[in-house]
Image (tube, rainbow, N blue to C red; front, side, top):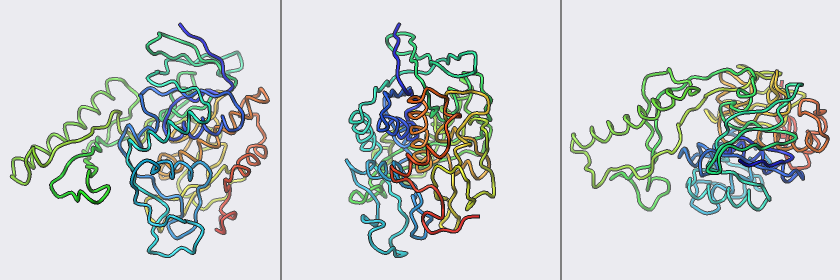
Length: 391
């Protein structure tokens, strides 16, 4: 029903996809981004997980730069924040300054992401579902099939970014993937009688509830439906318990906004040329495209992210970004969250733009060329670049 051609097409409009699209467009590529919901930002906006985790090592050294930092400030452009130190990096850090992180209003962030994408001249396809992938005889993706109110269409490009969060583009092209595992859970914004109306985000706190089941992969239609309904059951049960006990009433305690997407942490990722694994924090990789801090503790060290974990083992013409990259164990805990999604997204966008310009597959690009562009964009690639000693 419709056909379009681009230099770069980004599948998935979460933080990784947004970063990839902006980077590709800023590198001169005619770029499109395809998002199945009506909001960009993924779990950060549609999923209501409004915590922009740390861009530092927890002890005053910033490790994530470029779009990871730009998007953090975009998240609070149209709303309140919890960023303690406004001039991070300009004055000496003190323990009371906390980490380089913030909480934000999901709706505010969604508006800022729209602004960034439109100002970059990106062709935005929302409410558009990825349905399939076309390949040539060299196993290289040449187009993706999408469906929206216009019907089924075809978006062709010279290079693609899989930022779907579940390796959907690579999987539909026949590439190998590895499934993750998730607890049934829900994050929902609600009104609480104990909330402080003058203190963000306490005025509309985020209620997190988790079940004990750990069986959800997120790659089957029936499974996704069950996950969402079971998650909302957790919230209903919580309110019923509070009402029955007399602690609260429906006039004082009630949901305000529910997530509009399944809140999976790990769905599926590519099998890459390389895989980031347990124990590789503080490791220097010669093909690093940036760094990410460990949000789980200020005592845990940061990670370098290899470009080779973003390249599928079998499928060509595409580079992965976000939680779709090849990582496992504790490394997947790092790559699945907002800062690392932005780091890998920016690198993916740069690589896709370079590949499109040269009419080659992203796996054919010399790493040095990608690194040069990232450095020009203000990205720090290695631990030694910020004064940390890697292994």
